[in-house]
Image 1: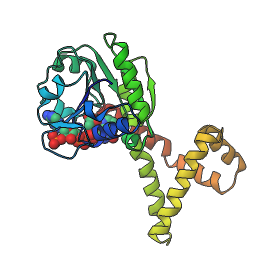
Image 2 (image 1 turned 135 degrees about the vertical axis):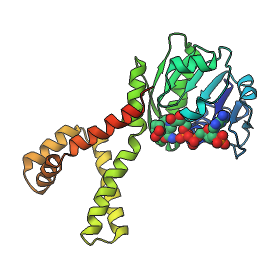
Image 3 (image 1 turned 180 degrees about the vertical axis):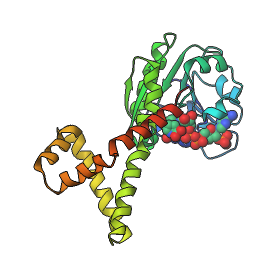
Image 4 (image 1 turned 90 degrees about the vertical axis):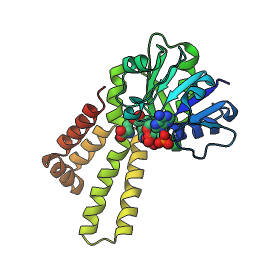
Length: 255
Ligand SMILES: NC(=O)C1=CN([C@@H]2O[C@H](COP(=O)(O)OP(=O)(O)OC[C@H]3O[C@@H](n4cnc5c(N)ncnc54)[C@H](OP(=O)(O)O)[C@@H]3O)[C@@H](O)[C@H]2O)C=CC1
Ligand SMILES: O=C(O)[C@@H]1CCC=N1
């Protein structure tokens, strides 16, 4: 198995990739190095270091999973080894300049990687070779579903749409819960009701065969209570609010 090093491998996303990769048999823990500045627990059998040069020397593929500002303070030389970056808003050009490699893959998972439910797009430079591309596909299949995309701009946009997107339904859920509480429903019941609803609605959208647009149209045409709610939400600027949020996240994710 390929030797893998994850710089920032003890963080939120890096540790999720390590755990899922090991659990799904894509990573051999004996061939896995993780780095961070402060010591912490690592998966059984894996190696930890605070010296990125040691990690690089022990790796055939180096995953970059530090925050963009932390990356910009790092000095690393991959000496041509392939780099797999999960950083939002750090371009392949910047990575190439900072790490001395042209074999770069950018992937954009999300916080659902930990539970094996991330949708992860990835893009590879022309210099990236087949083994690291295949390994990227396997690693992110271990974290959910992986899909190769044709151009780098799609990775930057994905940081807003799906990379950040796991928190957006949470905002919608909280708005519903707050409303129910204001109507006198006990907080725990409101949370149970709304979370059950959103889980069921997502499963229905995924498996039910109707697109979101078809569901909205069916209920709008029914012209009952749901239509009253949908129409009022739209009139109050629901779509515009969602688009403004996505545009702001996309702007923040621009390299
Ligand atoms: N979390 C998410 O849902 C998503 C994150 N991303 C991207 O993933 C990247 C990592 O994010 P996330 O895991 O959330 O962040 P975290 O802050 O949880 O993890 C960053 C890790 O990097 C370590 N670190 C910082 N500086 C260095 C260094 N110089 N050398 C080695 N390790 C270092 C930190 O440990 P210590 O402080 O001890 O050094 C920490 O363990 C980001 O670029 C983000 O844009 C992308 C999509 C989703
Ligand atoms: O919020 C963030 O900055 C990180 C990157 C994409 C998702 N989470």
